Image (cartoon, rainbow, N blue to C red; front, side, top):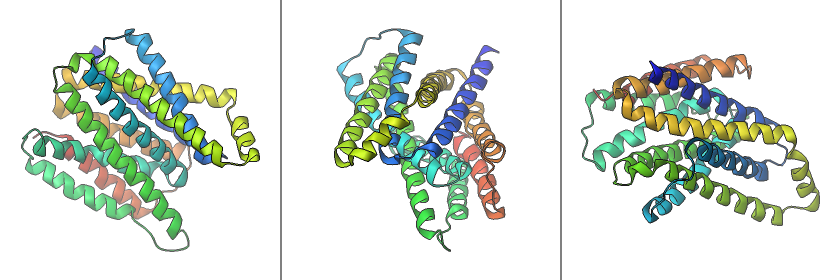
Length: 296
């Protein structure tokens, strides 16, 4: 029973983090710099949350190096997903990012020699169909739509790499260093984003840097901390649950229900209007996620 309660908390943390990111991103004025400021504070909050949950862990050189690589990819995923939220619809972005399940599924076959089932092959075909429903580069918003899809696709790839790296870490003798791995990752994500903020601020005008400072308000900091705690908790709980719950139940549930909740949030909170073809894309995407995450 306790594991199912943890599953509900994990999905709620993921949904809350995504909603906070979308809400915060829409308010950014100095967007290029704030994407990285936001990720830096989010990552610091995640590190503090992990330290509070598990204390200071033992870290090997392998975990240090893998964690740094994982952290840079995590930063890229966070920034480009945030850009996609701002550039385009929240609901469509969540669908595309969630479909990244296909990358770990394929890696299981090509890296670890796992069999790709007929169900997963059908899931991949459904994923392609879902993508086609969201691609719309016609009309006056052609450039905007293309930019949104590019951001969402980069987030899709990075999310997939994150899944592969997590699987790889859990298949090594250093799997017990999970807390240290995540702490190093979020620390590396912080450094990466702060370096980008420094580079951007050096290129900006004095007025733009003044605007940036004004955007880092108490409200913004609270939202960043909430998003960081949600990210840390969601990561740790999901990796724990993947080891104690049946895969046939866990992965379709956490991805499928998460997708449904995000779509409802887009309609209720962000008042998004979803076109008929996009509804088809969401439905097909949901089916694809369930098929891709099902090992049978």
